[in-house]
Image 1 (tube, rainbow over the protein chains, first blue to last red):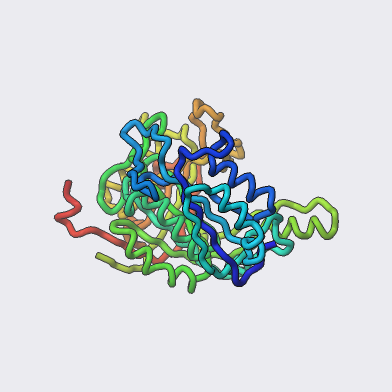
Image 2: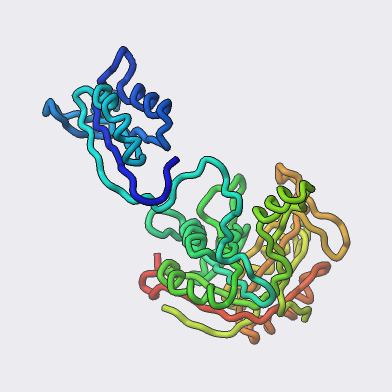
Length: 260
Length: 116
């Protein structure tokens, strides 16, 4: 089993058209690696390239060329690679095999970790902040809708949670009225993101919001977190007790809520 | 451009059936907000809920029923919200109005770029 630490990455370069006993070479190599218990392998199809025969392989506009370059990559321990290299050279035929010393930071696991890695945002209790971001559905960031980019950015920053709402009617900074058309004709709605986390984490995230949101409104309000549970912990408890655990649900109530 | 200020958020809960002078109530309120120059207004249609009449509002999945719960969320200064409230008193026959104090950051594009 592959452990974290020193290992070898092997790359095999082939031409797609090459066959070995009538089946594509990449397929027989993958089978060989699979049966020899290699931790994992990936075959990738190139879109253009040339090899030993100095013949340029590229897909025509009909994309049906079967002579495209193929690369197979796998990472294993030095001993294992040495053990299978002879047979591999035979299988690869005219193809090139390259080896590279690498460091495995985290080996892949074939079972779920026994103790789920707790996200950094797990322990939130009591006072927190709700940040609402108002935008238009047409707003974009780079090549995707802004609200999707924001959700990805929030996730990458371990923010506890976010929900995106599409308004059926509304207007904002630009004073254009957004109205939801029947049958969800897209890209014309008002969007609101509701984000909850501690004040520090949301403030730390703000510069990114500032960078991404060109036009919009960001609204902060204080909330009390009543319950914030992580489902994986419940599953863990189920394993220990052998009992049915309650599904966990996040919940919060607005602290400054008041009737006029 | 970035501005920061303290403001009020007001949420009005009612049903999609509710009308004002023949027009859906949420459209009428949004129009009133625009007329008063309210900063931000957005209407959400809930997928399920119940309100003051304890009548469960549950639009069917084909969205044919119009009796969905509606939540209107408005953000502006205390003063502007104060100007809107008397209109809500008249327009909302059955519903709930909740306000909270919020802190607002407004991002806006320079005017020449905002123009189409």
